[in-house]
Image (tube, rainbow, N blue to C red; front, side, top):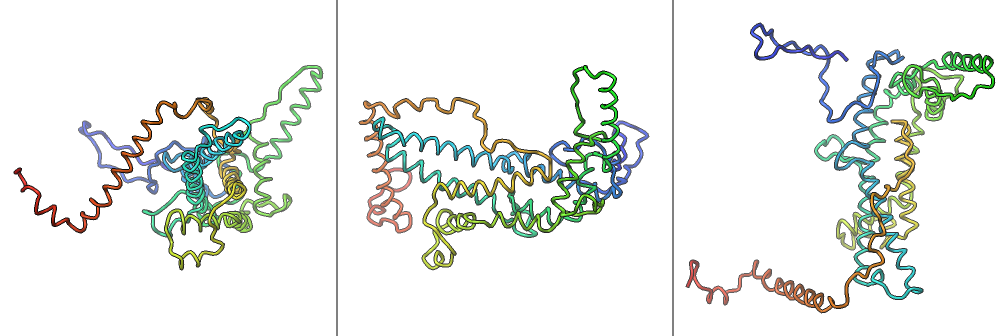
Length: 376
């Protein structure tokens, strides 16, 4: 893209009028480019199409990883961290029969852990499934369906040549591959007993092996056989249909219904009756399957859009995650103080019932006996 011409500074007496940009304006992005090579270095026949595709990829990369508050990667990390935290705490409860009563089995703690876990997982899962309202940027969300829908809408930009050569990989890689194999064969023939390491470039104009991999992946995405490849091949509609199918598979719709009718909203009996397959709760297998389906889409998009294979869905602990787990939750001598706290809290809330009522319906008797404002 042509850069706007520079403008002389205010202290330049011979400053010329500001020149208009030679290219269309592009919104400033808060993050560095994900690309390492300029468009002119890319072996494509339609540079404008590639530029538009790269803009889309940059935008999607920000939704994937770079949004500081709500990126897809961050949402998945939070969901899976709290999942393993609860499962670890729950596993500790399984030892109670052999080890005796522990703080891990205290009903007060168990109730908070279990209900909080269920609600948190339902909210996390359904956030990732949320469909953004059409043509309402102020209500836009970062979710898997958003990426899939935007990819489908931009399908004409995701040609084979744009896909393979987006960051200067060679479209025609066979000649480079053959030349490298000949060079290695000649080197080995000249020094057959010499130990050597073979290092292949994975990026840029010399990355023939990575280009081969990208072509093979696009063969699967497009449904085109290798012998029929063309620069203008497009990702097949079946690819997007499969992603939509996964995002609509059981138990994901049921989890959405549970959130909408029970957890996030207190739906009445009639409204609950309209929800197909509404459940009163979920089990661990439901959550396992939900996580699996979401990761199927997330991993696929990560590989297809950015060539990034994500190895572990669970964040790596940065501290001793079992610290203090073997310690008592509360010293026995503190029980009396805890009962006092409980009674004080209950008394305050019971007082609210009277005081809050009089926020709406004033207490006339109290008003008659109250001193005037400013003191007695």
